[in-house]
Image 1: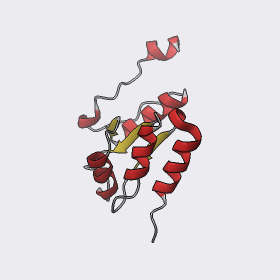
Image 2 (image 1 turned 30 degrees about the vertical axis):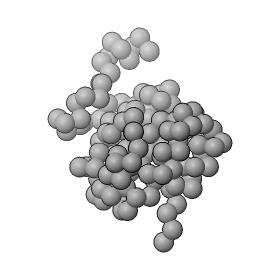
Image 3 (image 1 turned 90 degrees about the vertical axis):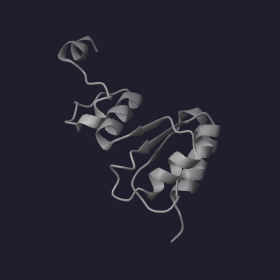
Length: 113
């Protein structure tokens, strides 16, 4: 099986530069790490799933070891971050205690937005 994420990330980095957000989730081996590095070189954002939460931590662990990633987050916090970056705010999901670093939106904040 050939790695598929690296070519996708490299192509996106060359085409869209700083508008790219690369997300590496659960998986085996090191697929995604070199492509994520290229995204960073072109000014994009690198986001990686917390390896402790991943069913298969190989890809997230490799990405963290090889790239200066911008965010290492659990899945619930990842959803929140991607919503923020896309300009939408998903409803806060229940999170384990270790993910409480991700902000939650109070009713007052939602009304202001």
